Structure formats: structure tokens, C-alpha cells
Length: 613
Figure 1 (cartoon, one colour):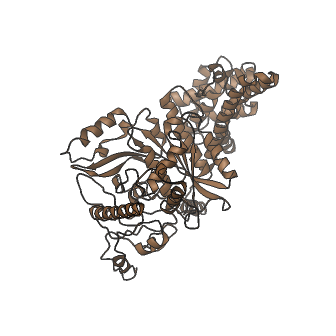
Figure 2: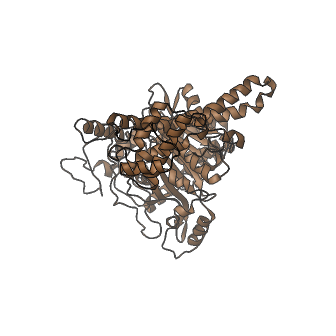
Figure 3: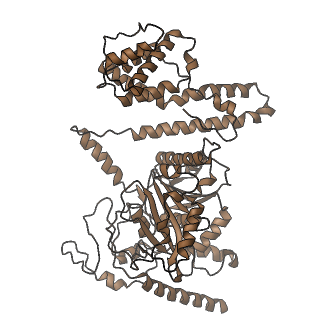
């Protein structure tokens, strides 16, 4: 088994990480019977697991015990017969084993078949031996380091402590991986009476858990992610340099905080919180950008007095914690490469001690954090980082969202199609998996990968969109691409349309109309979408000034009469744990844009008038 090299550790330390598991004589005797057993009891996959276990054990463990060493040799010959020569007949397997031994294996009764109980025991024994082999691999190194600490003068301890800390962090990751494996194997599906109903009940309760998904403020992205950001999954947004990857994550963090007011933390005594871990911009830089994002201010934060800034953030930005907005928003900064993924657990525990429960982590960005295992190969390390994010997401049962950059070829594609005014192809649709920079393991290990890119309609540079193109998804979705407009006069705030008419477009340069044909999508728990008047009442921060509320309120939503002639593609279903998204009638983006533009200009004139007074 390959061991990754920790950051700052020597090859000498890595070479000492050996599996020193010492199997008992009785265990080896059963495994000798196991390797020649009938394929009905012991399949090729079982033998493959046995091969992984035996291969991982350091051969020096048995060099001074000839009886155990002979049994190991017997098992290895049996594995060779079953895997490399594909032998299934017991007599032929035995013949192959004996032809390669320089001793007589009198410890095996070839006439006795392995019992069902023995085979079952061996299956479990091998599985556990593989799973917890890391304990034996680290033991000798830890003992050596502990001895060094005890025998080293206190003033010279700095030579040992960093290595000790790294080993402990690596071991902690191994423990967490093992725990995740336990969680994943905790349930068995079977068609047998009783087992079937129990398994389906557990699966159904899991997928309909009202806290399983967190929606954002954009209908298109909720559709694309099959209902929102799902717990235990890793999402990676990919874009070229300067496209707005950090801004997109900041938009998402704020939107998730706003649009999941009924989320229930696992510990009801804790305050749920969204965590934005920035490793690129400092907290000061991020908060000033947040000010520009959530307020309608014409000027930067420094142009206002402190009371004005606080008032704007609380009133315009709705950055408060109350009954209507119970989710906290935590921004933390760590310098580039200053921490590895083990810091996520410390951050989670630190917040817990402060009475806060992390319900979603957004990390900016992937290349700025280290893998717990380190390594000099950047491509391999990036894959490890995503895997470690996955472990963290699974253990804490939250979604983890990050971002990463696309390669230079993606930049060439963007320049080529953006400058071609006659092109009928949306630029972002031309970018695919081959444009992910550095590591294909990022795509292999992540659950959802989405390319983002700023785009506009050909010949009209005044309206800017952030295009989202799905390139990997582990779930079913009816949306592969959409373009979300930016708010008028704000080049970093994406329009939030989850509680109103859809503002996204399914194409910028082919089909000019906003999609109205996609099926309704199930969203998370608390978002039982109703008529627009109800939504406006429940969401004080929502801008509904451009909507004809009387028109919506006069629509008959009675399920029995099914008088839905004024609504396109709306399905009214019997209420369930996760209610369907009831999509209100649409107005075009052009109509909304002109009305919102006029309203914004009026507000600016009023502000200028007040300033002049």
C-alpha cells in the first residue's frame, strides 16, 4: 500500500510506516483452508481481499517464525492460482500450490472442506484486517517518536514535535475514514420479509429528511443540483482566473443563509451557521466585498460612517440573527497553504464550543489548502484534498463547497467565442472536463462539478450573466446549463429569484426565452413554495416591487378544481415532507430588467437628493 509523504517529513519516516500485523497460527490455518475453498463459499472477490491483506503485511514480521512463514507462502501460492491462473477446481489449485513450495504443507487437510461458519469468519476477519491495518502501520513510528520525546532535552523538542504532530494528524484521518466506512455499511438491503421494509423505510427517511438539502437563492442552480446542496457531498465550481469564483461562493454563502430559515441543527441547543473559509482574501477584504454584495450603496464601505455601515448591513443586507433569519454567517481566514484539511475538524469543534453548529462549509479555494498526507505530486494531492473534503462532509453530514481554476485552453475558448459576434453557441457550453486544470482526480473524486463563466448576449454587453454548466453529477437533474443575470448596477450580486418568477435563461444566444418547460424540482424541507403573496410575506428581504401581486393573488390554487390556466408547467401535489416548487407565472427578464433599472435609478436620485439636503 502506497503511503503519501506528509508535508515536511523525511523519506526515512515514511519508510518506517509498515504494516506489522502478526496473525495467529489458528487464523493462518483457517486462511489456508479458505484459499482452496469451493468458489460457492469463497469467490474471486474474496480472494482479492485476502490478497490485499497479505500483500500489505511486512514480510519481516514472519522471518523468524518458520511455521507462520510457511503458511504465508501457502496462502500466496493459492492466491496466485485463483487470481493469476483463474483456477476454480480444488485439485488444480492444490496442485499449483504444491508445485511452488519447497516444503510439505502438513498443516493442511486437503480432504476437509471449509465450513460455512469458518468462511463467514474469514470474510469478516479479512475485511477488518484491511480496514484497521493503519493501526499497525503507525504503531512503531509513534513508539519511536514517543521515545525520542522522552529522551530529548526540552529545549530540543522542536526537532521531534512537528513529525509527531504530522503522524497524529495522519492517523486521525485514517480513523475518520474508517468511521465513514462504518456508517456506509451500517445498512443492508434485501428482498427478504422484514429486511426489505426496514431498508426502504430508512432510505426513504434519509432522502425525504427536511434537513438533507440546502437551497440557494437561484432557481436554476437548485434545479441543476437536483433540489439544493445535499449533505455528505462535495461541490466544486470551476472557472478561469478573474471570472468571479470567490464572488460566486460568497453569493452562495449569503443565499444559503437567507433561504433556509427552517433548517434544524442536529443539536437544537446550537445556532446553525454557514462557514466561509477564505484562503485567498482576508476577512477585511471579504467583508468589504460582502458590503458591496448585499447593499445597494453606490460607494464603497469607507465612504460611509460606521453607524451608516452597520445600519446598511443590517437593514439592506439583512445580516442579522432573529426568528426569521436564524442562521449565523461565519467568515474565517487562513493564509495560503497554512493549514491542511485536519483544520476543518478543529474549526468545527471550535464553533461547537461557541454554541454554533456548522451546517455548510464553503472553502475558497481548493489549491490553497493542503492534504493531510501532503505529497510532492500536486495532481495526486488535489485528488486527496477532495477525498478528505468528502470524508469531512460525510462525518459531519453537511455539504462542502469549493472552487478551482480551469486551464489556459478554457481561456482560449472563452476569448474565441466571446469575440465572435455571430456565434450561436453559448461560450460556457464549450468548456468541459478536459479543461479542468492540474488534476483529473478532482473530477473523479467530487460529487458535483460545475463550470462558471461570465457571459452576455451577442451584441449586448450591457446585461451580464453568470453562466453555469454542469460537467459532473452523481444524481438526476433536468438542468445542464443556465445563465443567471447580475443585479442591475451591481457586478457581483447574482439575482435571487427563488421566490418569484424565474430570471435565468437556458440559452443566451440560441433561445432568447427563459425556460418554462422544465419539470418542477423538489427543494429542501422548509421551502414549501406557495403563491407569491405568501412568499413575500414570509421573506421580508425579497424585492417584489416589480410583481403584480393582485394578479397572483387572484389565481385559483384550489387543487380540486385545477383551475391553473394562468400558470405554465405547475404541478400541485399532495403536501409531503418535501413540497414541490410551485412556479409562479413568469415575466421576461427584459421586463424585469427595465422595471428594476428604473426603480434603482429612482432610489439613487432620492439618495442624492437627501445627500444634497
